[in-house]
Length: 148
Image (cartoon, rainbow, N blue to C red; front, side):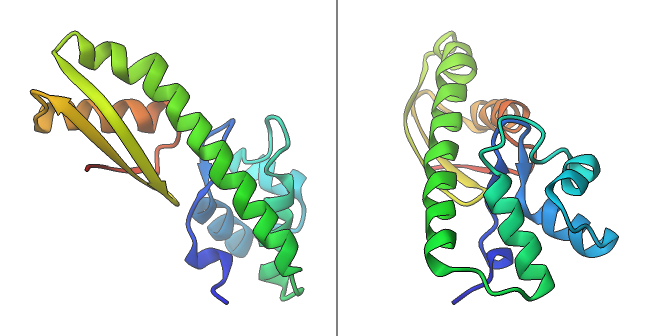
């Protein structure tokens, strides 16, 4: 089974922190608690839904076995919350800006920190750059945004 480090994801949806930042800080600084992670990289400083995922990362780094069912539940929650966060950002920030240019958002797919956005109308590289900028600003600066 791959480690969590092999599955980069949007960990803290409130504050837009990706899991690679948490892994790096926890390893480099020897972080051992959610509070230390929050202080170092802000992850976990919002609603708290990512606390179990942060604890899972800390356990993995310490070599503590992680219950596969807990890991699966964390993955499901993360995926659902990331979808919601991206959809809300597309609706509130991206679609209105693109609509003024005659461009539509036809849909999107998310896999970890990679977002593929399907654009319709007269979409071009400039429109994709705008989508990339807005999603990184509103969701997570580590997102890889591509046209689908």
